[in-house]
Image 1: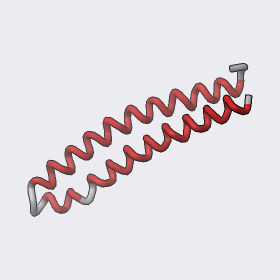
Image 2: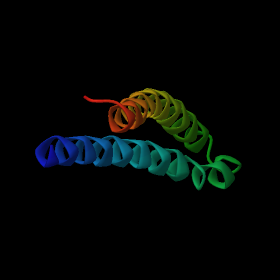
Image 3: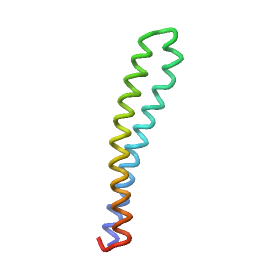
Length: 79
């Protein structure tokens, strides 16, 4: 039982780290916005970073939510 709980915890930690990484990428798009006023390629960089971050965050959030749901279900029932 303890090994299964450890596996669930490690998997949840990994998916949360992926979600955090996606949010960090989205945060890296923000500093390019003021620069875009002076240098137009910065707008493209900000746009690409924001779109990629949104896509990664949606996927990571979906996987993380499913794993949290399964962990809660597993806690309340016999796995």
